[in-house]
Amino acid sequence: MSNRSLSALALAALAVFAAPRLHAQRPGGPPAPGQEHGNGPRGQQPQGPKPYAEVVTDKAVSDTGVFMLHRIGDQLLFEIPRAQLGRPFLLVGDMAGAQNGTGYAGVVSVSRVVRWERLGNRVLLRNVGYDIVADSSTTVSRAVRVNNVEPIIMAFDVAAWSADSNPVIDVSKLFTTDVPELSVSGRERRVRHFDPSRSLIEQAKVFPTNLNVKAIQTWSSDSVPQDRSLGTITEVVQYSMVALPGTPAPRRLCDSRVGFFSTEQIDDGTREQRAAKRCYIDRWRLVPKDPNAAVSDPVKPIVFYIDPGTPAKWVPWLIRGVEDWQPAFRHAGFSNAIIAKPAPTHEQDPNFSMDDARYSYVRWLPSTTENAFGPHISDPRTGEILQSSIGYYHNVMNLLRDWYFVQAGPNDPRAQKLPMPDDLVGECLAYVIAHEVGHT
Image (cartoon, rainbow, N blue to C red; front, side, top):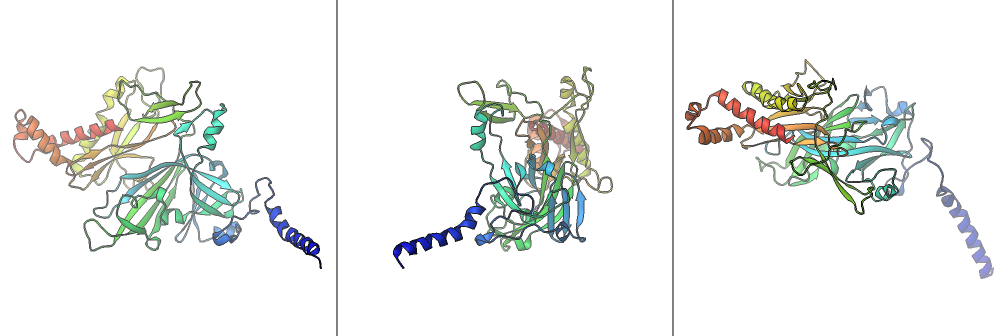
């Protein structure tokens, strides 16, 4: 056989074997549910979605809200309504329970905006940024979009499709493996590695606009605070995912003459001959019930809940510290704009949680640290304050005693004898809380 004949046979064979691959790469529209498989590890193709009843079995404990949640043993499934795909959510992670020396319950460590996106038979959890923006009606908005690809935090295979074509995914690994974007401990402590075998989902709850997942997470560590004989750090982490407001709050531009906490963006869609830096004041959304009244109650007041772990004798003083801001809001046209109340008990409201990102709170922290703090979480699109978590350490009272003794002792007989009376210490605590509320 001639070399020319061999070449012809080789080309024919190549065409036969290459044809299916070329056909598979031919562009087309998005696949219908169940018609596409992504490549799995080592190039293997994972099994496609199963029938719904084989995934959400009769053993599932289900609950409905912004998503549908299904618990099957240690497995947690999200059934995501199609209407929620693409919607921005605020994802907050805070310590719900801390090992001695590793931190304090209530301290927020994770705060980011995410969205869920379906791509064929996969669902992607993406991180959303608003640092660089441009009005969608401008041509430059396309350049902004293609140069701001949203990072994929995690990708999930669709396990099943509901009757309404909603994807069902297993999200267990999101909360029980080492995910840097959701890490509360890994980057801040001397840990070796995350241990999935000693990590599990403790609880999952869903509500109309948010869901909460509480996970026990365990790390191996070379330097465990308080007990160097240990090689383990175990913490309870609460993740809250809250839908951002469907109607963003009106923005208010910063004023350099007054100090504010602020949200900043770079706007590339202006008519200016440069990218413009925009600065928006971080502020609560207060809307008057009666817009025609000189002073009106707000539609939704600012509410701070007092930690049930607070020593009872200090609770009234903490409430006073929060509500000391009412006169300032009255000057702005609002009555009862800011209130504080004890957190409801489980019997009063079984769905209430101090770790729920919908609620603001004042939390007592058992520590020798002489300090307090008052951070907040705001909508990165507008600067609207969505939640605040004030914390005060037990020994801030020691600092207040020393301050007051030195500064006011000569003029106030109550400060001339130690220990100071509770009413004086209470006034000092109210001052600290009012100060921290000002930070929000």
